[in-house]
Image (cartoon, rainbow, N blue to C red; front, top):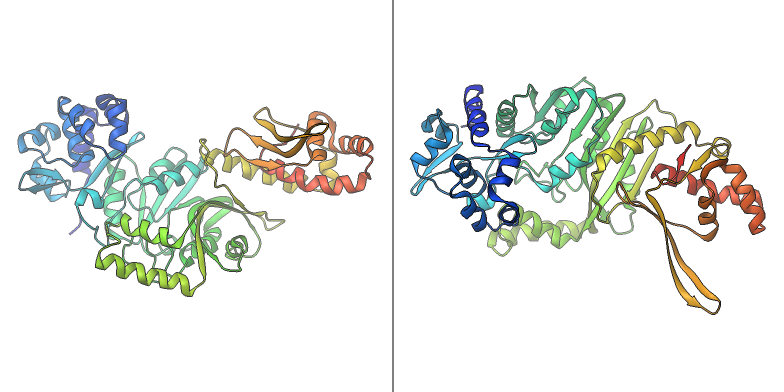
Length: 492
């Protein structure tokens, strides 16, 4: 039986939440910074004490964020005019021996509320196979990495509890959300109604619910967990072996994009012995007509990967069930020569087929700024290079180094002063790109102040270093293209 999160019920919940101040800012104000931080670390007692005297807001915090049992009169005061039996029927609450507890995870997220299933810690045991995941690190990472320019139509493929569609509501006029899971769609529908959003829903596998349609933007957080072809949990397992789920989305997504449309997803890929990961993911792309940017954020050891995902589902790796599942998983990795599992973001753009750009790169260092704005700018820079990336055009362009870019040098003592060991160009904003340079390249960039075209700078540099101009141009142009692509050198 699915929870009946209808318009009447969600309207009542919205009124109760607004009245109590159950919002992101309201919760932070009620708890205070230290107790709120402790709660996010999994230390509930400071938050529980702070919520005790916070009226209906404190009740909702203890119920949904701390998992406490509440007496019936206290719950009635928090939910105002909503009948408790209605809330129990809709799974919002569940009766227990010690009172009423949350039956669903309903929590503030930015300017919205998100409805999902209770996780393993909240349930006190493993989650069921149709578990609907709530707000997690992966969904937040994808939301931060998504381009946010205004679009007319957007598809949230594999919506789950609806997090990506919520964020899309800020820049997309019409949103379509699909999922294979009936339960996921029921909770997503509740999420959208609770937030007053009109979202078209569709059920089915992969792109099946939107066959023969195209969108300006597609966002997807697929079941990207890699391993043997099985489905233990629908939120993470696709039933496809290895990294075939990520490959399927990358291969098919461009055909569901309008010309110039952008698709973005989280993905995983295998690192196999003797195989370059960039060759592997590039092979997933359809031939021509697609700009692609694969950004690798992490590489996991197979043993650590298996243990992490077992715990995520509430399965103790030390239990008989955990040992059995781990053995099957690790055997599959060993049989397929898997040395690691890569994880990251993929951005695809449908183009007219001429000179598509495919870039695979590591971005495993820490950075603060969200990747979404950088993604939009990366696409702009790729467009500029497509139009102006020839040797003739680049040489005629005047460039400048943005103020956010610094040159860092590491030197060692030498007989005559210092000898530079490393020259590194470092962009301080965005994802913090870094490029190592030689002495000549550093000198070339020092002259990029928007006054002279690149050809003049190279000619002067060749004269100063007594090198042939042609050779210096051949070495400089690939470096210039890379720096332009990463926003570390820009045309004036």
